Length: 146
Image (cartoon, rainbow, N blue to C red):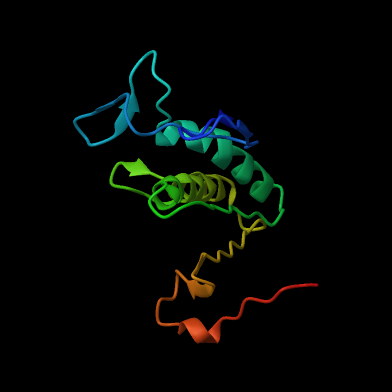
């Protein structure tokens, strides 16, 4: 991705695994799902899941520990992409739904599964457990390895 700030001639280049457009170019379906219009760059939640969630799911299924890390400015769409809302489910709910469908389809008397999940937020250098909101921010420590 290349940008040129309006007040400068300096070109800045950034490399991303994926960069998505989600500001316009979509239609809202009757159920509330926002689907991209043909010929636009709009990335709906299914596109984001196919790019990020499918690989996450495949690696988790193989027994690997997996991590999704969303970083960016406030209001840039991290929560929407990761969690979503309404019919526009994000990467984590879609991944979990598929994971538990696979588990249900393959569990037997001799095959069982264990799923462990942690969901954390780092904001203003404070760590917060999003799955246990009663945990005080000062109970969780951010540590650096020098």
